[in-house]
Image (cartoon, rainbow, N blue to C red):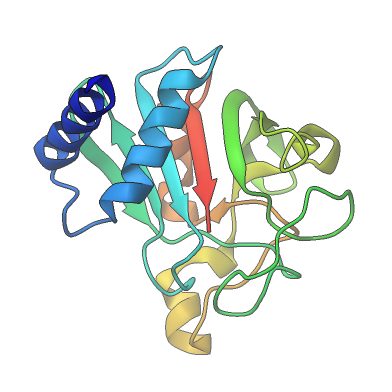
Length: 186
């Protein structure tokens, strides 16, 4: 009975935020439950990455849980060795140049070779817990833009990082940095 009540609360939140035409309820439910179970989450912000979708579709979603609204919905790159238009192979191995799945906690920002970037800590043992060692970060990339898709028919690929368009990278990072949860699924 308690499980049904909990699921009903999550479903109500899903509808209040208006996610019906944005993502599958089961994906939101799994991500929300992961958010609730994450020790160290300091912000009421949940990012969901749906790697089941091709790179030509929006698959990076930032949800402000406090305001109950979808703040960002955009493209995101996956690792060059994870697949072409759609990611199909995932890894936690250093130098694999593949995307990692699981639960991440956002941490500090820095300026690197891709400009303003955000360090991620992988919390899913064996799936993404080498994110720091692998330098898996959110950063901007020219290959993560609609223009790139228009020219090539797919989004460019990273070395495993969830790379975003330079147009929104800073705004997204500023919203999610410092202890929000990212749930990456395929």
